[in-house]
Figure 1 (cartoon, protein in one colour):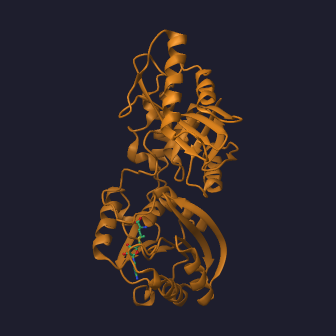
Figure 2: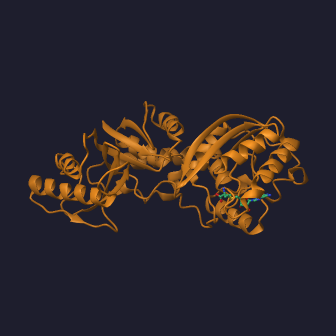
Figure 3: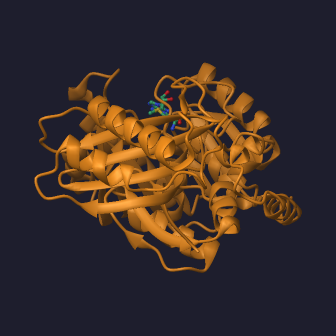
Amino acid sequence: MLRLFATVANGLEDVAASEIERITGRSVAIGVGKVFFCGDEETIFKVNMLSRTVNRVMILLHHDRLDDISLDKIYSAAKLLNYRGIIDPNQSFAVRARRVGTHNFTSVDVASQVGQAIIDSYLKERGYRLRVNLDNPDIEFIAIVRNDEFILGLNTTGESLHKRHYRVYNHPAALNTTIASAMIMISGWRPDESMLDPMCGGGTIPIEAALTARTVPPGYFRMKDFAFLKFRFINLKAFDEVVSRTISAMNHEYSPIYGMDENGRYLEGAIMNAESAGVRDTISFMLGDATRLRNHLDFSPRYVVTNPPYGIRMRKGRMEPFYRGFLESLKEVAEGSTLTLITALRKKFLRAAEAAEISIVEKREVLHGEIRTTIFKCII
Ligand SMILES: C[S@@+](CC[C@H](N)C(=O)[O-])C[C@H]1O[C@@H](n2cnc3c(N)ncnc32)[C@H](O)[C@@H]1O
């Protein structure tokens, strides 16, 4: 049994924990931007292949709180570990570090201390000096210092899972795919219900919904691109079995999913992305104005999941009337539906919702990259 953790956008830890519990059947503990669980090799393969909400899956090598945390203490903790079962002498490695809190050292210092500790430990244990390769390492360690907490993990994923590899068109304000999937889960939508994203941009939300409806695992698009494929200590036969089980469970039923945008160029990009993801025939894309929905819809969507502009490209003063116009237009066509929406303009959205007499049933703060956003769930 291995101790594992997965990284997730801050604010979505509970959503990721529930998803991993569903995937693995094991209980999951919640941290900040991380969730912790236990499992074997198959758990690593399954979470990497199937999770729609996590960014990376790590083997937890060390987790401790260090009084008066310092680079020396970090070095000592990392040097005590045994790396002989993890890296072969001819494999290269890198350490990536993240640091949160007030310290008299930087994340670069942490990476370099942990790297030195790994080299020194391996030299002592096996008599080999390991090679560092920062650009294309065989093995990647993640060192996280959060206040007095020190975590050392082994990256089993490689590049973050939010990079789904189906995206051939990049919208200038594209939503992170793992956040889009978490919003779909928060919304409560089930694939036999209708769903609309009326401001779909490059199509992330409808595409993630369509992949969910057709039970296409997100890992399907990167099956040859997981860090664990370079691990010499893992039996990859179980991975082949996970892949064939998940592929044979794929469902080709269609669900009523709709994507709309007022910008034809973005819509063309969304169609290219949907084609690349193999779900073009599951989504109806339409050109239209989200503040005039009744001009475009001949049905009443049960679920609306959307990522409207944050006002970075639009003048901020126009955003509150815009949100209000959208909510009032939605009320005309889909009274009683559930709206799940992400915005960086929390106060403006709250005022617009109050003016449009929309009740908010859930709100949570989520870090979208560097942007502090709120996901609202409302009954229209
Ligand atoms: C933040 S972006 C959505 C990005 C999208 N979630 C993605 O991942 O690519 C907001 C989108 O809203 C669209 N938009 C703005 N005003 C609109 C309106 N009145 N009706 C429909 N779409 C609108 C913009 O064209 C833009 O594509």
